[in-house]
Length: 408
Ligand SMILES: Cc1ncc(COP(=O)(O)O)c(C=O)c1O
Image 1 (cartoon, rainbow, N blue to C red):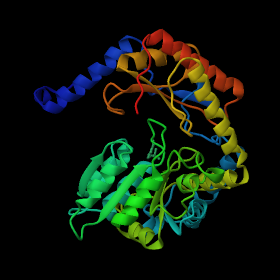
Image 2 (image 1 turned 90 degrees about the vertical axis):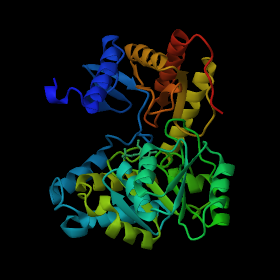
Image 3 (image 1 turned 90 degrees about the horizontal axis):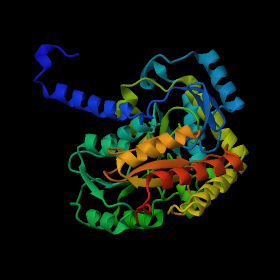
Image 4 (image 1 turned 45 degrees about the horizontal axis):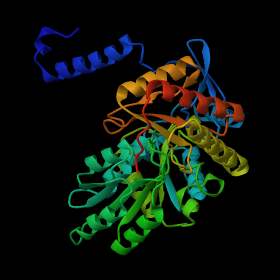
């Protein structure tokens, strides 16, 4: 219900049109977003009193719910409370925040790190601080939305290049006027597609052209490289990335985000980046949970091996079921339906079978590339992975009788 004086306002039309779009999906019983999860237990969640197998978790190493992590969070809350005295630059900093940053830096092989209250915030904060008007930022078309938002907010010239097209990155940098700041930014593992950035080519280009290289490791930390240390380790290119960023809500089952790099960058971000200066500190419990998770990642490298075994089995199972999926070394497996409707129907049928994989439609992905993004974790058993692969393949054949389109 809107007041009469707003009836002709374009905002009113916009919100009503969107509400109508949602209602049409709900009326067909195809709306699977915002499902209220009542309990979490390993790779299963309870929704509406029913336990379903999750085929879309980000807790890649199966650490969500780990007793050591929960104990660390509880202890931090007891010692420091539920929040801090505001922003860190003033009275909101704790020794826990400082220790978390040192721990992150040592884990990812950087000299310094800065923690933010989310990965989204970290991306927006760093990019909008280090580049501005007159600078150039080169961004892969499939980079995460928070990277794009950081670029837009910065005021720098944004050059969006076709996905993993490193020749286009090189061309864009060749045209930059002298004196401009230049930044190349990409995801390590692309969040909607599960493929890996061509890091060696980007490193070579950035070194030749004198550009800073920033990589978002949200889906590669805990996944790629020795003991899950990430993209540099995966390619044997230690020290090649100037700025490493990651969310703390994926393999590390907490909330927050970080930027890792040289100490001068960390100092700049802590004094100038608006999300650090004008927004409250990460809750102590989240900081402690992240540190406990990093300890576990170091102590239990077998989780990374288990994850690898599971995503290979998932891909093999889907291929055996007649789906065309690529053999990327990651737990994110897109099953592209093309049309929104097919993705919505497939997700509903899967849910009815007891497997929860929410559909992904535009604008989260480009139009006509709607998909189910299937993921498995180290917490899934062999039987769980088999069940997910078989259920996805069966619903795929029910919903889309033609072969799956593939993206090169
Ligand atoms: C690649 C990537 N970067 C950044 C983020 C944002 O992280 P957060 O959820 O911690 O804000 C995400 C989250 O989905 C992501 O997938």
